[in-house]
Amino acid sequence: MSIMRINIGPMHPSTHGLLRLIVDVDGDKIENIEPRIGFLHRGVEKLLENRMYMQSPPFLEKIDYVAPMGWDELFVASIEQATQTQVKEAAQYIRMILLEFQRIASHLLWIGTFLNDLGQMFTIFMWAFRERAEVLKLLEDISGSRMFYVNFRLGGLTRQIPEDFVERAFKLTDYLEAKVTQYKDIIDDSSIFIQRTKRIGVLPKDIAIAYGVSGPVLRASGIHEDVRKSKPYYAYDKINFKIPIRINGDSLDRYKVRYEEIFQSIYIIRKCLDYYNGLSNKDVIGLPIKLIGPPAKPDIVITQRELPRGEGLIYMIPAPQKPYRVALRSPAFSNLAALPKLATGSKFADLFSILGSLDIVMPEIDK
Amino acid sequence: MSDEFNSGSNAEEIINAEQKMTNLMFKSNEIKPNVMFLKLKDLMKYTNSLKTWSRKNSVWPMLFGLACCAIELMDFGAERIDAERKGYLLFRGTPRQCDVMIVAGWVTKSIAPRIKRLYEQMLSPKYVIAYGECAVCGGPWFESYNIIKGVDQIVPVDIYVAGCPPKPENLFEALIKLQKKINGDEIGNSERSISSNIRKI
Image 1 (cartoon, chains in turn blue, cyan):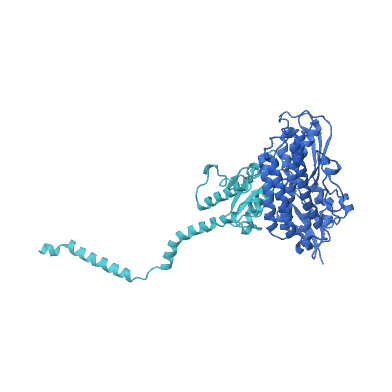
Image 2 (image 1 turned 45 degrees about the vertical axis):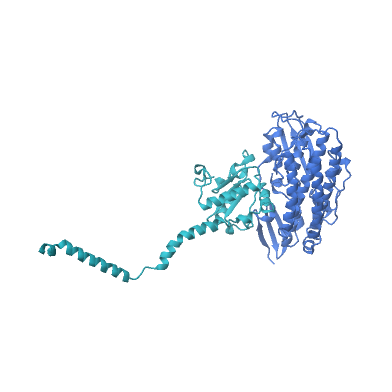
């Protein structure tokens, strides 16, 4: 048959942002995919060069709006590394708790939208948003904002933690565990879901490494790699959590890795809450913002963090008042780069099952 | 007596009165004008109010998100606020079925012509809500080289919602204000309205 060219997007409900895909199909089979990006480009890296250090976190948060706290913390951590600021012990545990809650919220939103893409309209979507709303409520009470919590300072946090925080966080983990376990009945046992994801969009090990894929997508291909384990920061080395791994590398495995990560995050949160409870000094307030900016050494700073979507990296050349150059390595970009390899040869109807399972966020790719 | 008989004024009055009577009689025998037409004319008053009432209570938004605010838009469509009770049905996928376009997110130079085309594809009457600071004025990206500072430079905007991002409740309030606007009420300062004075790119 002759090859037909189909244009998808840039405004399409299943592309998770503004992504244009040009697909060549032969009948129902995908011959070639060409992703076109850049519809949300706004020059973040250039904007960061013109700002004092602690004016920048609001810009970093909007890079990945599904899990804003990850990028915020990554940037603050790179400044801390440049200025050699020690994070207070209580603040370390609180940061870990907040980051893991953010990871849970991000994975919950992904589960809801992924099931929407597969055609199971709005049941799981409503459930996942109900649980996510509870997480956001806790984060809002700590930081004062619902979505963009600019809550990190050098060496700690902006605000004091409320007194009933530990009790509430424990209750929330119980609630999440009870509710997320229920998803198993409606997702994992559904034969339609299994048929639409099993052995679809298979990413072999060697190709995953060659394309620089990271995060749950990499772990679903059977590679034991997590920055929290390989280069532990804060107190992650004190906690004996598992990294969920699957070996097949298809869409179903990517779902299962994320699903199990929610429970691992709950485990980490509980351990951190125990450690935090035992501390005598519970002060978490960091250094005040100085508009002049911290005295930074002119050296190269590289910081890695395990974000919900994969491995985020900041390469910064600090200067005394502003950063001379900031380069951001976004995990979603390299995950999207593997899409043509993944989807070529599969059916056109499976394209959004594959694209959704990669969990991309477009502003992180366009920057 | 003769004066009384010959007084032309009296006689003319009588003749005039007779003619008036015959005229009236003649008019009553005339064919009546279209009754249906008259009633429709009266009915238009009621139909107009019916039209605005139904237009006001079935505003369908377009499934169209750009950036961060689209996540709050999803939250708006989720279980948090039951917007269907006010007539905001499910988000529609095609602009031809929609009444209101919610611009949620920053508008880059490459996406601006597409937003304009989507707006032109909508059937009138059509309304636009600028949701979030980026759509209102450029927001935090005001200094960026690739951002259009406010969606009102491309399409006329009816309602602005400030915040970064505004809560879903704010969007609901904006949509209720839009209902008032469709009803013909004034919802804000008319001097500040930009919809009648579109700037060009």
